[in-house]
Length: 164
Picture 1: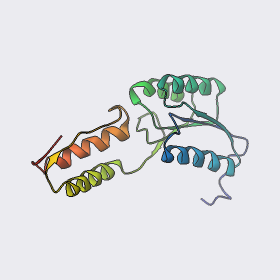
Picture 2 (picture 1 turned 60 degrees about the vertical axis):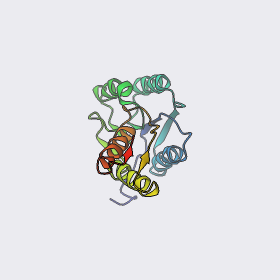
Picture 3 (picture 1 turned 90 degrees about the horizontal axis):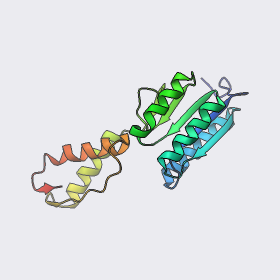
């Protein structure tokens, strides 16, 4: 559909992000807001500052405000899933960005499987196919972190001289 056919006029859209301190997170957060406004919608934008409990409090506030939809960006599924379910239970359409959950109508995401594998392959090449790797990973309950780490481990099974 063309932009002329799409309209959020008269709609309030809640946008919840776990944080915007990384460039990609900030640009995605701004991009979501810009697109909602461009389509005529009113944005209720909330940035949790990388604090899980702050994001939960913000989701509770959004549920109480009963927006026409909520877009949730990134976060810890162990913490979020019960509240994402409550959004669905409240009849509010839920869309997510890099948060793979069965409660979302749609999850817009990068190909994290490919990203994890490509990073691992580049690292192995840079190491000359041998050496030790110390991994600093985010929470395993954050889908992006889980997928990329799992792909790293999978790729490294083909390189016995590279150890985690």
